[in-house]
Length: 128
Image (cartoon, rainbow, N blue to C red):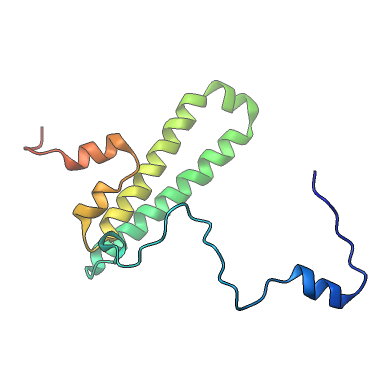
């Protein structure tokens, strides 16, 4: 339960409710964001950037469809496993877009959050 604070004057509000501009805000991330990370530097290849954009667009469309289907409780109950598969496919598309957009795709593949996708991307040998 949260406590309700009532201010008697605008001055009291300014003194107690506003954070001073000079104070440094703590990040909400668990780990510090590293801007020099090579996986986050975008690639110079315009074609790969466009392909990544299209993959993210497809992911958003799949997510909208999944959301619409899961709003119906009967459909969600009957096809829950299929809806989870759709969600997994959408997440894989998003992760692939991140890898394609990176200037260092090998490093980006190591950071893929889905272990099975990361394993398939890191496998060696021929197609087969």
